[in-house]
Image 1 (spheres, rainbow, N blue to C red):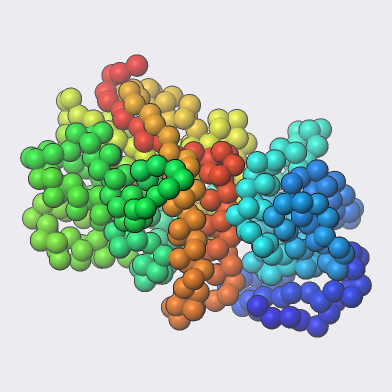
Image 2: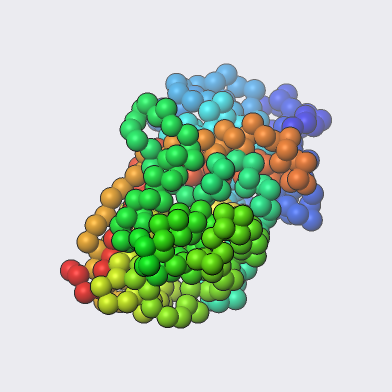
Length: 424
C-alpha cells in the first residue's frame, strides 16, 4: 500500500487518501471512481452514517476522531467510499476496499457486524425500491454449458500454485468438519478428511461400489473413495484441477480405480450406486437446478444414495439475490447462487428425490475460512511472486473474510444432506 498526494474530501480537508496502484486494464472499475446520479452520494452518506451510529462498530471517517465501540472500520477517503456505494451498492463497497479507500483492524469482525445487521443498513421503505437500483446479473454468467465452463475457469483455473499456498495438503476447498468447539487440537487436513469420510459414509461408498462425483476439486474425495475399494468417475470443468487431480491419483497408484473427466454434469452417463457432490450446486445457478437434480436422479442406480454438501442461505434472502449482480459474482464466483434448504428440498422432490438426512456445520466453515485467510495473508509475498498484484490480493482477502463473516453471523450455513429416490 502506498500513500498518494493528499486530496481534499468533504469529510476532512487534510487527510491523505490511501491509494492502491492498480492496472486500469485489469481493474477498470477499481481505478475509476464512479459519478452517481445527483443527490445519491448525499443519501448514501446520510444513511450509512446513521447506520454506523447504531452498530457495534468503531468508525473513523477521514481525519475525524473515531466514534462507537467494536472492531474498527477506517475510511481513508470518505468521498470516494460514499460515491462508490451510492453508485453500485455492495459492489462499490468491495471495490472501495480493493482500491484501498477503507481498511479494518479486524476485517472479518467488521464484516460480521455488517452481515448480522444487513437489514438495518437501509430503512424499510427504501428496501422496497431495491429492484430499481441493484444491478442485474450479466446474461453471459448463466449456467449454460458454455457459461458454466467459463464461470468455473474464471475461479478454479487461476493457478493450482495459488490454492496450494493456503489450502491444507489434501487440497480440499470446502468446509472441514472439526471435532469440537472451541478447542481443536487437530490439523485442518484431519478435519477435511473427517468431512469427506462423513459424506462417503452417507452415500454408502465401500468396496466394489460405483461412485459418481460431480465436482472433482483436486481429487481428494475420489482418492479416499478409491482407497475404500470403490470405482470412481469424477467430473470437473477446470483443466487446472483435472491435471493436478490426475497427477495426484497416479502418484497414489489409484489410476485403475479413478477416472477424471473434463465434463459437464449434464453429460454424465451410466448409473452409479452413489453420487457425491460437494459445494458444486452453488455454481449451477437457479435456472439450472431442475436439470442438476434430474441429472443426479438419472445417475442413480436402484437403491442408490446421493450425498450433497451445500452452502445455504435463508429462502427470502435467496429470492432477493437470485438475479442480483453482487461483488462476489462480479469478481470471485460468476454465475453462482447459494440455495436455501427449502429450494434444495423442492427441486429434489420435483426430480423424484427426497431429503432423508440434513445436518449443518456453519461454525465449522467459519473456522475453515479463518485458517485459509490467515494462511493466505501470511504468504502474501509468495502470492505476489506468482504474478498476482496487490489489488487481487486485497480482493481475495476480502472474499475470504466476507465469507467467514457470512457464517459467523449465521447469514450462511453449510449442510450435508442425504437424498434417495422417492422418499418424502
